Image 1: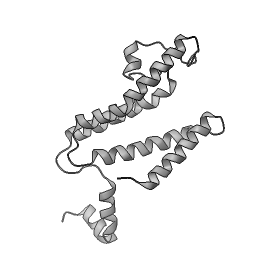
Image 2 (image 1 turned 90 degrees about the vertical axis):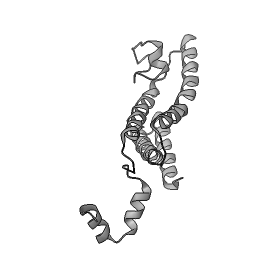
Image 3 (image 1 turned 180 degrees about the vertical axis):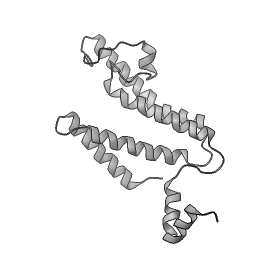
Length: 163
């Protein structure tokens, strides 16, 4: 399901991040908006019927890692050629930490910290999907729409009393 308002927020968030990196604005609000949008979308995906934890996690990783590895390889190559891309991050970790996004302080690609937190979030959602009992436990937009379509008194009564 495509939410046009969410796509509009993504465009605004992207603009804020671009302006932040160019020095015109603080980029932090744009990143925060992206995290909220990601949380909303991922919960919508995880709330779909027949969503398994491992396929969910595999799809999320497939969206992140291939392009990350390409950009990381390019950054390592640039760094090997003597062009320093992250001298302000003094840490040096084993290669596996960079390849699997195990640390937030990535010398070759400093912006990768956002991907580390996205992976933590995806892993926690996969855990919820794995252990959840049958039936929906995640609130989604459909449930909120159904609640909004009832009269206010009925919706309130159903929340607080057993029917």
